[in-house]
Length: 102
Length: 490
Image (cartoon, rainbow over all chains, first blue to last red; front, side, top):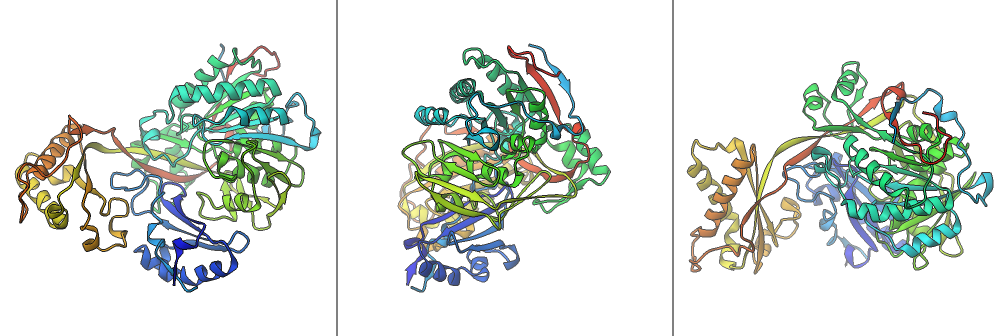
């Protein structure tokens, strides 16, 4: 088993507006891209991020770029008093340890 | 300096631009853009010189974003210092003077409020003479008065968007400032009146890229897609970093993205991947008046680190809508930052901190009620970044040898926030937890004073869509300087 962060070229998160965080994973080749698509399903992501499956929004895979993208509504809007991450830049961390069957 | 106000005229978008760029080597079928993705963050002068030597028709400058949080919109203060803005602008305005390019700025000051637009206008006016820039300067005010928005709400023209809650009159009255993200139309109006520099309030970040192409009959979809590629400046080139300029050429049926910095290059991957950045949907870009459909966009690598893109399409909306942003004051904050180096205490923080909260409430009694404040212990080294999403177990984490504790108090008044913060800090410092042997104090406080007042806390309270039928009633266009040329329509 390989960790996602041992093979992905990009794993990132960022605000898409103040109410949504958008996540991207880019893979270097077809084999790892396929394995990542198998591993990063909506039910898996929902559990990883502690949300209902319906809150995993705009789940997209892009074969040219070998990218997986999804978005999640923020619990706290950007910069509101309980927010932990105004830019949403470090919220991807739960993805790092996802295991790929490689 | 004369200032006059004009409203947008219907059909303004159909006016032709005057010839742009002294040396339009590309002729009528090419528009050359230089993009600065974050005004004030700097760029190497060599990159700019390179772009000037290629020729520039439009300098498109993005001065803001909602990424920076609600503070700048709520408090109406600029995001970047004047000194940093002046450095970037003086170079860019000089380049525009040399090349004959038009300068289009959006989201002045970061939030794009009226005051920030005027502040940026003043900076621009102080730079034009030294830069030898002789053409007229216009401003576009995109801050909305609450009554405008309230009227729209009452007549059913407000749509709920990503806040998932309907706009109320309280939201409108309670916002410190409300702005609308303008599309290209106000820039087109200003250009039609002879503008050489346009300083815009809050704008859709590709509006500055669509304006001239729209006037000259180019494809809006391609222009908007080019704008999206260029508006983050250096991010679509390799190696990825924010603070650099990007250059693009728009043709009738495709556009080319290039990194004017000779140490950087654009690849199909870097450019295509950039469509994913900061957006939910990589295939559609929504903006005022319509959507850019990227489903059929094709990316081709050219020589010399350039990428050609075609196939992007503009799909107009039946109803023109503007995105509104508003921020309201939500509280006053007082903060203490301190280190904990005692593992015995770190182990027990899950019990200690709630106990401190209880003791705090007891000590405050009726003087300050729990509803008047919140205490947030942010524990860096444990779960400060992810909170309850932290996948590592509490047991694993409270093994840390050191924790950076931020005591974050937000309250109904600055005085309450200060009092509560001091009490919490004191309780935490002296707390007797089981097994404690470090009876001198539990916190390594780095500063005197230990606690400081943070700026007031705002939150985005308005993020809704407003249907508009007559843009001329929405935004204010003003002439800031006639420059030293006389072809101005006031």
